[in-house]
Amino acid sequence: MRKEWERISLSYDILSDENQRVRYDRNSDLLRLPDNFETAVSSFTSGLSTAAKTLGKGYQTGKKVLKTLDFAMAEIALQMKQVELVLQEKMDAELANEVLATNMVKKTVSVPPPPKGQYYSPFDACSIIKMHELHPLMDKPKAMRLMIENEYIPVQKGQLYNVYRQFKDGKIKDGKEWRKARPNSLTPSMHIC
Image (tube, rainbow, N blue to C red; front, side, top):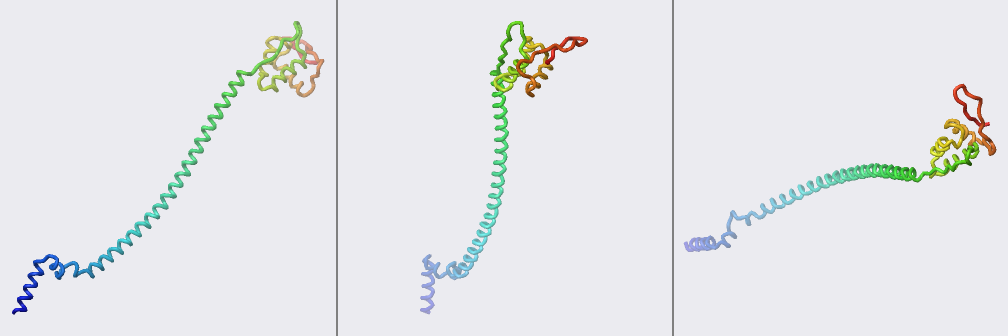
C-alpha cells in the first residue's frame, strides 16, 4: 500500500505541475513526435513539390510572357518606324513646298527689250530662252510669254517652240532672220528661213 500511495502521490505531483504533466502525458504531441515528424516531413516535401511545380509553371509562363513582350516590342518598333516614315514624308513634302515656294518667289525673268523698232533674231531669242531654261532661278515660260506679249519677236507661242526646238537641234545659227511666210487666207504669219 505504501507503494500504491507513493505512486498516487507521484501522479498527483506530476498532474499538479504543468511542466511535468506535459512531459508524462501519453496523449502529448511530444509522445507523438515520430508521427508528427513523419507528417511534417511529408508536408514539407509535398510543399516543396508544389512550390517546384508552381515555379516551373511560373518559369514557363514567364517565358511565354517574354516572347509575347518581345513580339509586342517588335510590333511597336515597326509601328514607330512607319510613323517615322510618314512624318519624314510629310517633312520632305513641306520642305519641297517651301523650296518650291521660295524658288517661285525668287525666279526671275531677264528679257531686255531689243533695239527700238526691231525684233530679236531667232538666235538671240532662243539664246535668252536657253539661259532661262538652264538657270534654276529663272522662269523660261514667263520669258517666252514676255517676248510674245511685248512683241519682241514676230511669231506666236507655237511657232516660238518650233524655232526653239530647231535651235536645240543646232539648226538655228547666228544671222538667221525671221521671214514672212506665204499669206494665209485668214492671217499672215511669220516663219524662219
